[in-house]
Length: 210
Image (cartoon, rainbow, N blue to C red; front, side, top):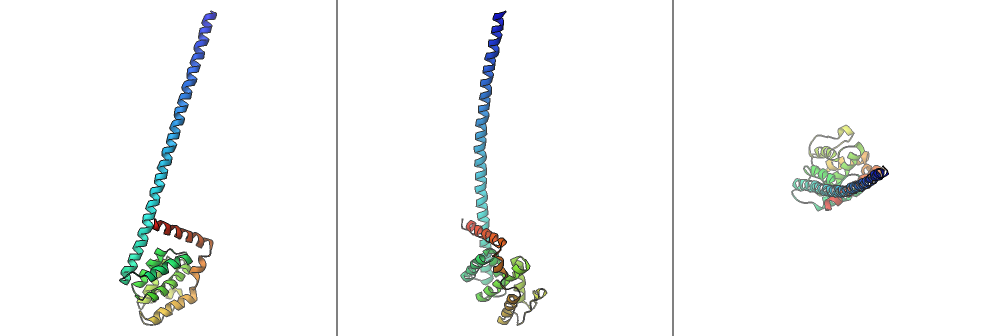
């Protein structure tokens, strides 16, 4: 009887030992699988982030290129002077240079002189900043006021005099806009929101370069 009990104990002990080894083996296998899964996940998300970054860079460049093409078509030539103004104004305001170039293109549809477009663009930025408008919408109002007999800015208290397309009309419009909204675009860039937007614009420039 004692011998049988001893045999039973040995069987139980050996079985327990094998079970422990099997459990360790399964645990080790699961651990290895988890590590492989982690590496695969990191590779996937890393690749996804890279692809997203490339797409964002391509999109940023495409927007910039399209804006520049609109300005070129409006003027019938490439204007390095206006492109430089857009870049400079981006650093001083919350507006991105591609937005500014689009505004220049709208104004350039009615006004062909680069100095006049530059002056009207600066006034447009102040209007957009003061009224919380989309810059392109503000540029549309300014360009219509310059290029037609309709004063699209009268609802904002801006009076305009002079013949359509004349220097007098341009000076009247920009002067009155400056008197009411002058400095809004640059001053707003000195706020926290302005600083964050400027940082975003800088990131956009880096993406365009990439």
